[in-house]
Image (tube, rainbow, N blue to C red; front, side, top):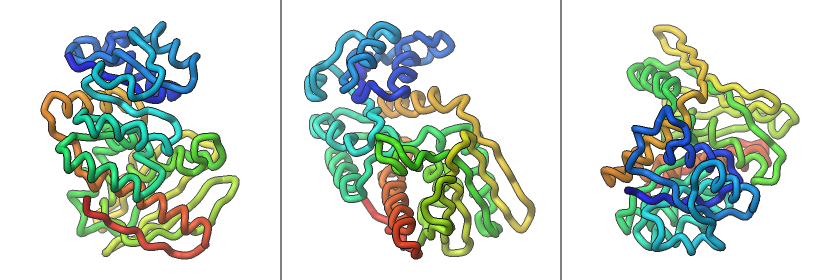
Length: 295
């Protein structure tokens, strides 16, 4: 049995993951019989108690480190990405596998440091946006991959929340970012915020070696979609969240069972560098290069 600890109970993801792993969502009960969320830490007491009362979590920790020795892995689900590295680091230092929710961190250097620590210790890590493992995103990414040399352009549309208590732009932008990177490639060269920061969100151009695409971070709507335009035609895909939570749980469970990561270290870190470049472009109104880092 893999004992899992949740760090950041205030996020709705914490409840969904706990209900899936603890068999509350009976649809998945037989799939995760070797997984159980046993403990949680969070700064919101009502959310802590809800996990105990509604999801069968066994105990509430006074601080994150109190889960050490009582869990075999952690899921960092704090809504504000500025806490992710601090929550995860003691467990990675102790050799425990970790899921780190979106955004991986809010600081590129911090993301790189954390990934390099985990890699050096041979501790598998997964996480980021659930949208990249949705069936529709994977379908669109497969189409783009099979037509890479024929791509002319493309676009991704997703919600954003420009003002909130969890990092403003950083809180929600990772969903679009990771869809876009998964579909069009993890090595963009530059970004340019074409409209800057507005009450309707942000529109950005993204440059690759052989094509340019657009990202539409939309304030005030809650739908996801992507389009790949190739010499052979146009493929558009609406992206739903129907399988987002169970697929994230499947990725995490597979990693715990096999010790193998779902993606690469670079795919964990690259979205943070991408969002930092985009944010800098929003502030300056200029094209900003995106660093492609090797972990």
